[in-house]
Each structure stands twice: as C-alpha cells, then as structure tokens.
Figure 1 (cartoon, rainbow, N blue to C red):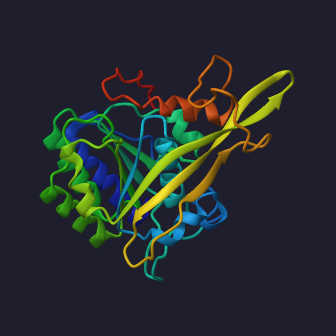
Figure 2: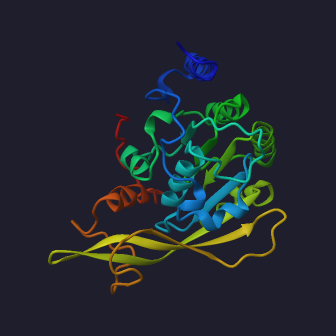
Length: 296
C-alpha cells in the first residue's frame, strides 16, 4: 500500500510527465529506513560548510573549468537528501523527504559520478528540456511542490540564465517550501549571470588546489584532490577563512606531482575518482558535451 508521501511523489511525477513527457527521468522511489543512506553532513568532509547552509536557500557553486565544482555539487546533493539526520540547521518541524532533482540543462549528467558520490539514483529526478521556458517552468514546479529536499540546476556553458525577476521567484519558492536550490555555474561568469550576485544567499567559489596520490603496485595513481572553497556570502555570518576539503585519497595526501594538475592520462584515474573526472569533463564551455549514459 502506498503511503501519503509516496502517493504525493507519484502524483507530482505524473503531472510533470503529462506536461513534458519523457524529458523527466526517474528510476523509482521508496521510503527508506533511518539507518540507510550516507552519514550526516557533520561526519563528512563537507562539515565545515554546514554552518553556512540552511534549508530553502539559493546557493551558487562556481569555479573555473576543472576546479572540482561539479564533484562538490554532487557531494552536497548527496548530503542534503541523506535520510539519517538533518544535514543543515533546521527546525524540529522540518521533514526529510530524501528526494532531489537534477536540472541537466547542458545534458552532461553522468549517473556513475552521482552514484560514486553516494546519491541513490532512485531518489533523483533528471530533467532535460529543450526550451528555456519549459526548463524554468519545471524548476518552479519542483520547488513549489514541497516534496523535494534539493534541486540542483546545472547552468555551466548555458547561454540563457535566469533573470533577476526569475531568480526572485525561484528564491521565494525555495524558501517557502524549505527546498534548497543549488545552481552550478562557471567562472568567469557571463554578464547575464550577474543576477546571481544579488539573489544567491550563499556563493561557494571552488578551486582545486592539489592532487592526492596513491601507490598501486608500481603505478602511482591519482586517488583524490583537495579543494579550497571561498564562502563569498553567508547571511548573518562573519567573513570566513577559505574552507579546505579533501576529496578521496588515502595514500600520499598533499603530494603534488609535477604538471599533475589537470593531467588526465589513461589509466591514471581509478575507483571513485574515475567517475568524478568524467563529470569534471563538464568544462563544456564551447565544447561538445559528453555522451549521455542512460539511468540504470
């Protein structure tokens, strides 16, 4: 028997597919026990960011091509929908839904990357629409439904971006429903993206600092990297020092190989890092997007 929550989710999906058809992809939804899922944000590498994020915010994640911003966005998405405990500063009345949507405007979503970052693909909707007007309408519908914990909108390489008025509506809908809206952008920003400077609650500027190396037999492989994140804006918070995060890597942490930054030799990436590098090929400003891999 379906629960009220499951019926509501199914109803929203049915309504969106009646309007936009198979541009809304989903592999199914089930309610999870509290012990399932990845750890709470406080016990992940993202813990230093927890003090600056709250439910219902508009958060911009930006950086230069290859900076690691996509990996960070996927990690945040995974943490925000995990079912074990609230990942943000939330009131006792907040309800965890464990459901998210990825607005894949540039058509570069890579399911193995999402799965490697701890995202249960059964709890992730993929939205791919041709017309900008439809993409914006679908995003507003998802935010206004009150059934999702987070919506991640990938705007990297997109010519069209939300206007100031559109961002104001999206921000209001996110705040009313407690749904976090993550917007992924690339630096340097186009003039049309400057509206985010005024409407984003928090802006996370990402830089990849150094690669972390692991020794496998005679091979020295990239096993992770470190990120520097500048929290440019956080309402009610004092100016911050850059946050440094370590993503993956168990071996020679902090070692930087000569010319290693951005190096992607064959066989040099393994495990989780392979899928993260694949998604980091989202540096698609002016480049052909990678081939889409269908959801399992």
